[in-house]
Amino acid sequence: MPQDATPFVRPDVRAFLNFLNSAGGPPMSALTPELARQTYLAMGSVGEREPLPLAVIRDLAAPGAAGPIPLRLYDPRETRDAGPVVVFFHGGGFVIGDLDTHHAICTEIAAALDLPVIAVDYRLAPEHPFPAAPDDCEAATRWIATGPAELGRTVTGLILTGDSAGGNLAIVTTQALMAKPAAAPVILQAPIYPLSDDKPDHASFQQFADGYLLTADTMTWFADAYAAVPGDVRAYPIYNDHAHTPPTVLVTAGLDPIRDSGRVYGAELIKAGVPVTFIEVPGIIHGFIQLRKAMPSAQDACSTVFAAIRHALSAIDAGANTQKDR
Image 1 (cartoon, helix red, strand yellow):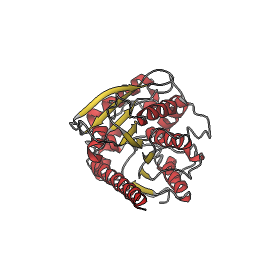
Image 2: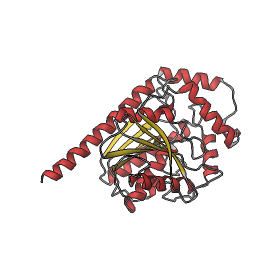
Image 3: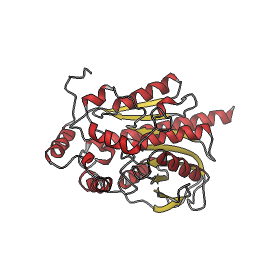
Image 4: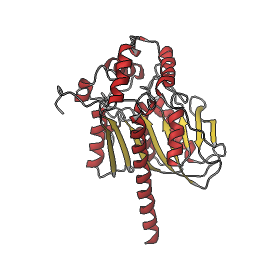
């Protein structure tokens, strides 16, 4: 689409943006990190659906180099046979977000996939700049892979997912575990509108820099707080090798300033021969998985993503069974 073309905006997205842009509050970049975190959590009461009831919702912790890493286990079943688990990393620009901001969507993922979901509450910048977040995510995921007694589940494979900064961390953690395998393998990654690179000239950065929830000013504020090393593969995973990446479900949002960062990552995976299911949700903004009440069509978009993950897992199972039969 030419940069000056009028983008398609879903009616419910337009209504939400009109409400948001007329509210007149200060931009997130003008807030302290603590106030920004409180604001982000409060936004859930306006935009997000209620969490689903599940058989198991339980807090636990993984050991980390800087102390315990808080986790939350979600499971629609009280007990289950050995199988894969989903590890979820929340978004928020590496500065905001926690187990509570993404609580409802984690219940949705667990119910939709009928799998255990373990959400990871990694350390946040600017108090804990790069590489604290990837350090915590890798440590927690390696611990989960061992199927520890505290988890109460035998883990045969890992599905790594997350939104925005969490999508970035899902990719980075996948790459770390492919380079040095954990007790259970990563069988699928599903980054949702992830940041993959530090290139400043993507067309989407300019086209959606203001007025579409995530702004250029906020992205700069996040980046300054995170203080990542330019070109470092643990911050910008597009610069890593992709040859051994597991099957991937990659999701972008049509009105997202970091849309093109996701697109170029998907292109690199395809060039490397990775099985990729690419979903770009048209007419919708960054953050849609947490705005399913404010924008009802976001729920349908999430259902499409979950169906793609289920399909990818079925293909993996079919391939594994074929190998056994040979």
